[in-house]
Length: 440
Image 1 (cartoon, rainbow, N blue to C red):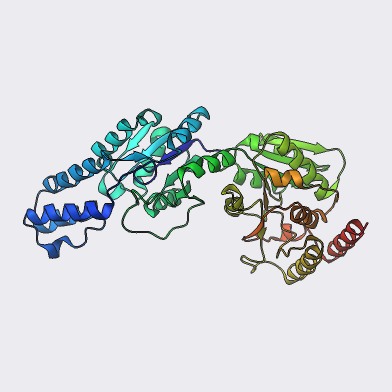
Image 2 (image 1 turned 180 degrees about the vertical axis):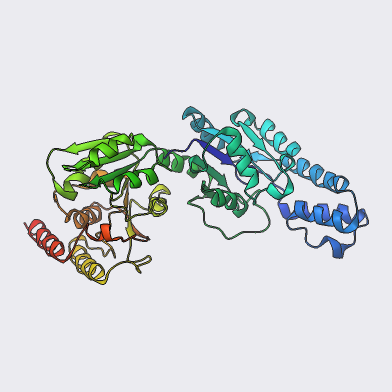
């Protein structure tokens, strides 16, 4: 993936502290009560910074005086902080890969710099953005704080990965179109309330994040294409929002139109068959090439425009997180409103036949949107040249012991894409090819 900037949350992501935020909140409440502020005005102080602003407005008290208590308590707490396991190694890895880094935190500047300096990691970050550096209306979970970081470093949002332990870290990434990773088990340093939002990826700790980012940075996409001059340019444009040009492999399967020319004009890898070998031949060529390039993850993505890049990210998720070896994007588990009945019925028949040979039922065996781990892809031997390859891949993956999962996706059917792929006649041929091939 084309990740050029990683923006980390600080407290709960990079560092933790023995004192929980609930205790910090109670200590701040005690100080404010001692200042003569009525308890009914204080409320539960969630979240603390915004409530201090409210209290200052309602009481006419000087915000700076109230805020100084929070900064002092916060700095004392962070002085007892510790670096989570795997943080330093991850930062060093990103530095070696030439990826810029920043910190986006709701902590005060005094506390944030104290944490970074005491743990010796301040030098890794090009920007450290704290709540003291942005107007309150821009502080995360609002998108302004993240937008300032991205603009300051001249990086596009889709080339940015935001890493945090709370929904407040994920919401601005969602708003700007950046990718996000949630660290789920760093309880020390997590805020005392939660926000329901779904990141692109989730890992328990920073140690697992290191494995995730390694996989994402070495992901290759195989795009089989036969006479796709009408759509291949738009498909590549979408993929290039998140993936590097040298990660995208277009297999021009003996096209007689401008497919090869258009693909090459986008600067991606183009492998050309002199004659049309069929979907199986194209996938076999592309996957073998990705393996030679030391891909950690391999995506297959149709060239006719029926897949969404957002769905590709969802299909990647379980494999990138190490929860599966092979993920299939299932149109039957997603929105089927645009899927014609004849295709649904044909898929059902082929799914049943595939299940007989694979020993595992997959609800959309003919889906062209798949993600393999490197080990799983290496276990798959493709012998079918034509459309039967979709079933063959599932059979091979199942027999190879790959952990298989399905991910709901939406198929975008247009008049153009309806003419592509399998139909009843092709379905009969696929079934017969599978029977003959697997019973030999």
